[in-house]
Amino acid sequence: MSYTLWGEPGSGSFMIEAALAEADQTVELIDLDLTKDEHRSEAFLAINPSGKVPALRFPDGEVMTQSAAILLALDEAHPRARLMPAVGAVDRRFALRWAVHIAAEIYPLIEISDYPLRFAPPETSEVGMRSLVRRRIRERWLLMERQAAGEGSFLLSGFSAIDLAVAVISDWAVGPEWRCKECPKLDAIAKAVARREKIAPIWRRHFPQQPA
Image 1 (tube, one colour):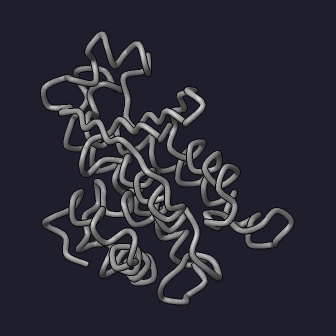
Image 2 (tube, rainbow, N blue to C red):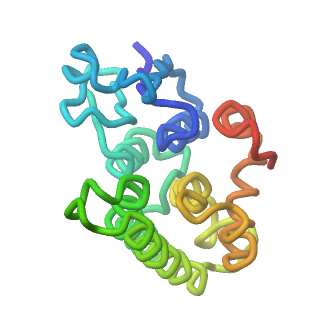
């Protein structure tokens, strides 16, 4: 039995699909159209009651959600793929730190940037709220930029699933032009991920307008 991945092109499901490719695993892809509220269908809510993608069914039948948790679980299931630095390595501590930083400090702000009035009273200025949130997002990417290894291809000393997260999330809300200008290390990481042999066709499927 192979993996089954529910996602949407251009979404965080890219990270999971790319990680599975790096691990040489087969996966059945089920693409949902969020613009048609397919993530709110009864069938999908039975899989993930939060109605969010990605969701991944493992070969044993269990379903996982939350991108960062899925990536850590895939690392445990496929250690030869080296999706994370080895247990005990100094790099692993930094990898865990950045995984949580992206998942807790940046990812939630994307939804607020996209839908600011979901999180504020109706009299709130949507433009002002979005501007403030995007400034916070930029600050948190700049923190990572200053502490990136500077290798030009990886956030740490070698490839890891953290690079996948950087590649797909770092232009959400702020745009690739800002990332290119203000975060050249992160921009280089995103471009390197897009060119990786096993990931390149997946990148083209998810981001056809963003060449590597």
